[in-house]
Image (cartoon, rainbow, N blue to C red; front, top):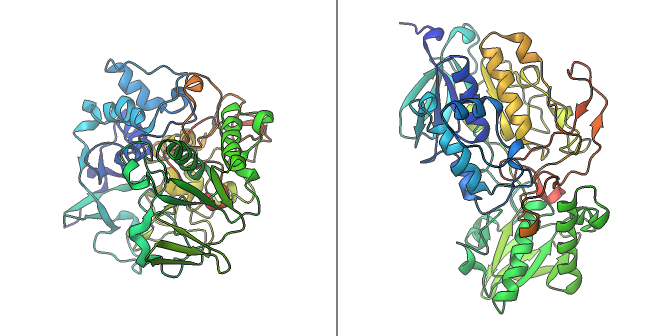
Length: 465
């Protein structure tokens, strides 16, 4: 007995900002859907870095379709000029969105996806794939059938390793008890793990900067707390940014504060340090680059994240061998060529795989590139849903018409007197770039938006982490 595709819902994996935006667009177009969220609430991953204040004000963190649904239900929109924390993003926007009648009955919590395939077909079988439902296997053994899959599962659960060669350093697995993932709440819930300890932070992006500044503050409060910063680069200059000359004041202020801590000796920086071995010992854990060794009590691995394509290994995907995105998207997001402010708008055409009906959107769509912006993810969701609705004109009319000042998130806390200000960010890129072929809207304006948590390779100093 066969199952007609048009009787099945679209499955959205992940109830984070981009997944819920996709749900809002699906609801707006009357397309049946189900959202599968591994956590017990909306934006579970965002809540893990809820203490972090975003660089982008509220007006750039809210999807347009989601805002329409919320406003119709009497939602009071947050002050567009304020900068939310991750917790505020979840509590004041994402959870209310997930709780709307149009979405709530379609959101399943505790639904961790472990595999996506075609019903009765493995990857080798070519006949009839496009007419065969997707089979989504859950961790509890349950199955979900779907006509299409929008994978917005993100990358938070798959951090990069400490090892500088892209694989774990010698001994890294055995030293896991000493290692913290990016963005621990140093001054809050995680304080006891760091107070009075020797802490090594590895990574050169803004997730590392956030943690370093918090640790420097903790060191002033808790005697015995020492902070060492290890980066692969020959200089921390890129992390410092432009200081007072930076076109983006908050990034300049952040870099200036970090530089001051390094120059005062509050933070010891090790440049040209590529982690090769991690060895637990009687006096803590030793981290070596093959020549130098530093001993610590705790290590914060702020080295970025990567996507997990394992759950879709039975699908026919055309992944770029370097970036891990679609091949069409890879040259548009390559961090060797682009910052987060110069990635052009893109949609269904750049996100399509040989496997009809499967699309990864959001930070997962970028593979290992650190140039993702939340506003870009919202545009991806809009374009993909329009294509699923058969509205190809709308699907291909991709654009980001935003103010000319380029802003992206650096996931760092700001001084209290800057929280209400507009215009902070981290990219420092030109306001507009020439329009690539096929992009609508005249000039491609620099996206003014925020990523949802760290997304890229912080060791490389990506601007959007």
